Image 1 (cartoon, rainbow, N blue to C red):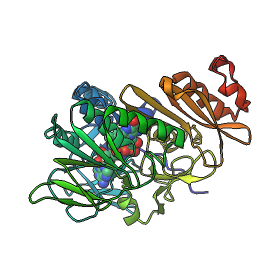
Image 2 (cartoon, helix red, strand yellow; image 1 turned 180 degrees about the horizontal axis):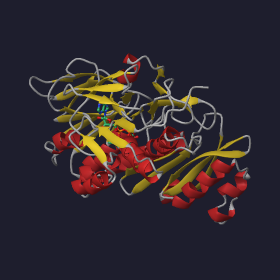
Image 3 (tube, helix red, strand yellow; image 1 turned 90 degrees about the vertical axis):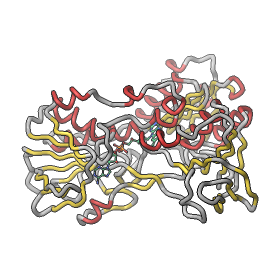
Length: 407
Ligand SMILES: Cc1cc2nc3c(=O)[nH]c(=O)nc-3n(C[C@H](O)[C@H](O)[C@H](O)COP(=O)(O)OP(=O)(O)OC[C@H]3O[C@@H](n4cnc5c(N)ncnc54)[C@H](O)[C@@H]3O)c2cc1C
């Protein structure tokens, strides 16, 4: 077994959700050495979920986006190097080359580099007026043209596209959503949940166009229309939400194994005992034994906690139940566990009442739950999943039995 490194200098690359959590856990768990976090954005770590929700809506102040106050980093003795990109890792010398030419030595390194948006590749894709949404800077650019009466073409009916559609239609924009697959959020939710959200968006005035991939953007200096399915739809602006790509180039160039993310074990360790990774950028074996990449706040927080613990010699395997949420209109969609198409679905409640849950049973045990405006179903569901609890479908479906009595 490789000799354990006792770190005196820890460097974190990526000042996001996972990076901020790692700082907190390292200090809370007694790491007293030098700590530096490098981030290529201009800001200290902030939450991204409100960007496509309340922050875009204008009901969530910018100051509230930040995960920790500046004083936190000062008091934690964490040097923040912002607006600076880590360019290369020299594993032999244990140092990181920064875009300003500096070399940062480390005993242990945490890669918390997240993801970047997948850019659409089609004629006209470089026109002005075509937006993406990942950062504060992206929202600033979008907000400048997010005006009542404007015609917005959303490319991709996933979480981001639909959250923006919900905010936009409330703002008085005319919204068309193009989705290449046959239903919205197809990779993330079951058909009953897709169907429900489609009906809500349509009722709110969003034009949903499934089974239709965008072929090109038209316009001279800026976008004026979108061509999809052979039909051209006028548009004053477009928002592209077609997924993300893990930021793993640094790891790849340093010779670390990568799949659709930086390969890590259940402790967040890469193939190099001095390098760990956490958050959206990792490819890890989930609690069901299947390797995957998760894009969620829960995963960034929990994986960063586990990686930080392992870095300072307190390893504890990461086995938490994955969970996620999305806010659209007055609806809070919450998902716990990872459903499979072969699971048995059980509906609890009535979508027409805008409060329901879909449980997914695998070999009789609760494997996943999707809930809408049903926090008890989510919270108890998470516990049932963690315990591998078996609950009879008719009990789950019976809303006269409170969730707390399900176990
Ligand atoms: C609009 C939006 C809405 C979302 N909504 C939800 C939601 O409702 N629920 C949910 O669970 N999740 C949501 N997410 C996902 C969630 O925000 C991410 O899963 C989470 O931010 C991942 O944290 P992370 O630390 O892995 O990556 P990030 O928070 O992305 O942080 C990574 C940071 O590293 C920086 N970086 C990358 N490479 C380098 C380098 N070489 N040098 C220096 N810095 C570098 C990046 O620029 C970035 O600042 C949303 C994401 C977005 C964009």
